[in-house]
Image (cartoon, rainbow, N blue to C red):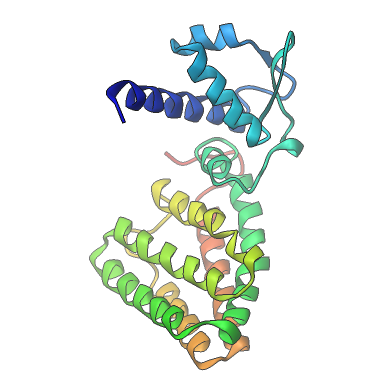
Length: 242
């Protein structure tokens, strides 16, 4: 890839993140109409960068584009709310509390079920990956390396969803990863992860390995409930921590 292509790609990503964040946070409201020319001037980039950005935002349901009308910001009912990028943008804005609540409720309805299914369908390799992820979480939890802990936590949940054997549940990996990442990057994690949370992850791994669906589901429910309580406890209504 040449320097110009790299520069264009970087500009596109920057404009996409800025414009996507403005829409997701309500800085640009539903029904508001923008023009390509206006966006070119606003961001100081070429028409091709703006058009590519709009194309991606359209694919996410955030805007619609029509000749002679312009680019219209879509209502939230039109958004692909499962797109990890939209989740990331909402978690970074004033909508964080509402987004955390809805994500917590989604996880409570999904991950315990996935854990029970994993107890029936997980391969030996997936069982090993779950156990290895828990060991890494324990190591990094003690050292306070939250980024390394996050990587192990994401690996655990991704493996669990895949081990369910259900392709629809596996497709939610990106959603769960954004929740976990947002919790770390928006300072909603304690400096030392809760020992109880690590213990529950270990219980899920053990239950999956032993084929105990009820125990796997119960331990996973504890994980999701603890994480949701902890995050919402730090995000009062109308308040966004720094």
